[in-house]
Image 1 (cartoon, one colour):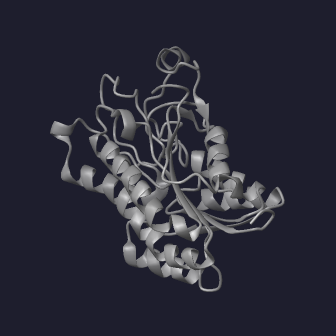
Image 2: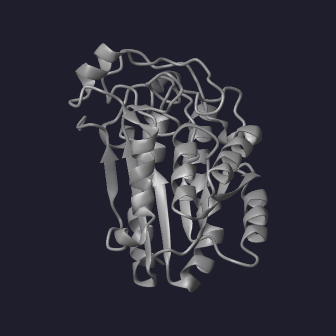
Length: 288
């Protein structure tokens, strides 16, 4: 597969970490489908930037929690050729202390991160298997590894995604397909802040690795058209970390960048990473 242009899909690709991943894959020579839901304009912008840089890209829109629409959209997309690189980056936050968490807050976060993973990956997996080559990268979070107050729903969703990553990797390893998860910590997504949830961290999400003093207000990325969209797409206000807080939490004394996360994803999507599968790889500056 070296030097070959493959078709890639990045869900939640319209801003922050997702946009950086799209651009990384575009620079590697792949045709990139930049997914968004209500953030279609932002996805169009990302696609245009990839094309302007000499790559190939197209913006697409659908709600990953709508199983029927997602399947119909993806089946049309792969009618003539499979998707061989899939990055499941779509995710939302709707934070609250667990005693006060509403059922809709629980289900909405699970629906996007976990049901969204199934709704997108399942229609694409058999065509990928037939090619005997594929890369699936699921964007998780250090929250799933360390926990975080106010994010029981998010930790549960991403923890389940990690487990699904390991199980699916066993099913498809003999078919030349790798399945891995990337778990970012505090990431500056290029919007001027580095912080929790969607405040500068796109969909990767970590508060203070279990050290948060209060849950943040509800905020969501644009992947399912929630009322509030994350700064990766719309710049919604949410708590951010100042330099002193980051220095206290992160041994490297800085936030990571979206480009650093994208570089890791790009490597896992490459031919060179063909012997890495079933792993949850942290990128958090030594937080855990």
